[in-house]
Amino acid sequence: MNDEYKCPACKSINTYQDGSLWICPDCYHEWDPSELAAEAESLVDVVLDANGTVLNNGDSVTVVKDLKVKGTTSAVKSGTKVKSIRLVDSNDGHNISCKIDGVGAMYLKSEFVKKI
Image (cartoon, rainbow, N blue to C red):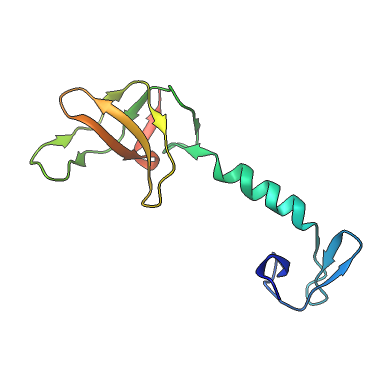
């Protein structure tokens, strides 16, 4: 059985289709797989800052924690302002591309910045 037809509530594979809905007889949960896919797709595109505010391309942010710069002895200090961020897809968690004065181009994790 395909993973997309597992129950999203209890993860049971004991499910069946009734019209356009799928039903789990174990927990009585009903769902439409197309709606779940649309919800998951919309959540992937959302990038949140440290306070839970949605970030967009071109926003200005402030660093909320001292961050060591890999390969150097310098660090990005807390309170550093970064203008015109660009959101990128990344599999290592660094989802912001930006230029920081005195440091240069780098990638940041959204959990270490807050929107101005």
